[in-house]
Length: 291
Image 1 (cartoon, one colour):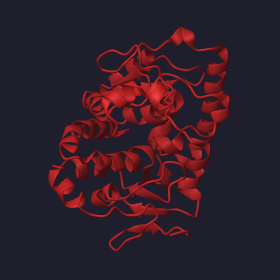
Image 2 (image 1 turned 180 degrees about the vertical axis):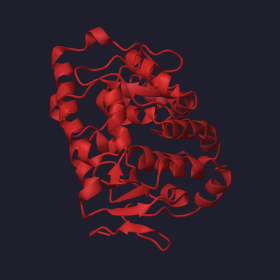
Image 3 (image 1 turned 120 degrees about the horizontal axis):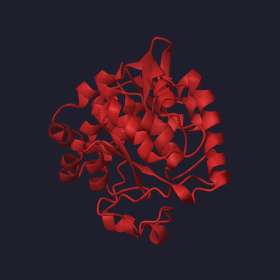
């Protein structure tokens, strides 16, 4: 997601900022070769553990499109080859998965999405990080994000998001656009025939937050409204206090297929809403016990 950090900050990240990826062998677009032969047997075993545990859980809590695409990816047995997944993905929606060292500067991230390339970290977490990880790894990026790229509408939305990046940078509004990514790509909920389900990569790659986002009484669940989402702060170190709920992916694409410049001009001077706020005008589907 957008980091609001510049290229020099991230180029120095392994020592200056503690990021795990090796940024020393990047191409000009910040991609690297996926070192398939470097994965150890223990790392493949950890992928299988994560995959088995999380795939059982998402059958009950994820939007149907997510686990249908997960089956199509056929990557349960080992850390997948990004090129193999990309071959399948190109046939579905003309997207690619490209390996990167880790977090990217905003302009690079937006450019990849605008060109229908999803940048995914190639390395996997440590066993002691199985339940919580600060920096996205290959499991988060591939298991969490890639299944939705098989959906044509969501795939088009994510490209639209990337195309809007330069305007956000020009308006000094990347934090606002980052909130949209956080709430609607990482932690989004959606209505289905079987009730509200999760589709965001952040919760679907998290054992605890998958259940929490759908079943728990503590958080607010509020119908999606673009301006509301972009004014709302979020938590980076705990489960969310508010989740926004789409009617369908068409709503997300249609509502975001606009000129964001007037929206930035309107929102930037305003104080953002607290992560647990419920405000006048919200369509509240569930008011959290802590709200």
